[in-house]
Amino acid sequence: MRRVFRRNIRKTLSQNIPPVLQEANFAFDKGEYGRAGELFENLAQAADDRGGPRAPLFHLQAGRARILAGQTKLGMPSLKRGLELFAQRSQWQKLDQMGQRILGELAAHSLSQEASEIEALLKKLSSSISAVETNPTPAKKPLLPTYCPSCGAAVRPDEVEWLDEVTAECAYCGSLVRES
Image (tube, rainbow, N blue to C red; front, side, top):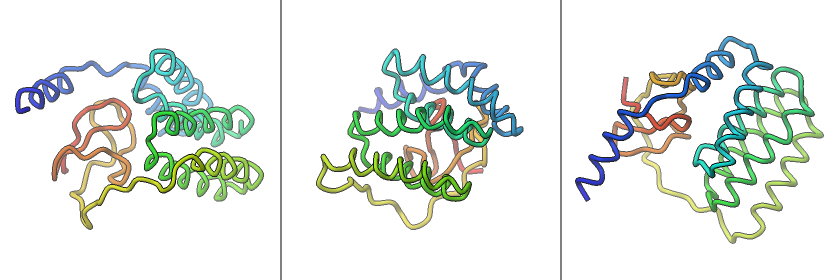
């Protein structure tokens, strides 16, 4: 068990971050949402084609970027695809968590029609399970850096996968992120 964990850490530390991911995150943070949406769509499609574990997140980020760019019709299919992938992979907690986040963001941008579509999709996707799986989360987590030092993605403590008490994995590139 210990060797497997060390091997995974070594693999994570030595991986190369795709420059397109760094560029997409940089464009998103600069407010170049149209460009970021295009880049995240390319990342999402490539990850989706190979069954990559980060495909749902790339789809969701592409959708968010398109909506922030005022391209709602281009963003909605990406949002829906990302949520559908979480359901297909039985990642119920992430489906619920990201679905609620998307609903909040759509409501904040006065996109009630789109929020209704997402809400209907979430009900449809969640109808096949009896209850959303919940993992107990400690009341207080360590403070993480705001952005991943490797790829530049925003790091949210409630959305990362915690590996231990002070180490989390970046949802976008898999790099280790530690308490700042």
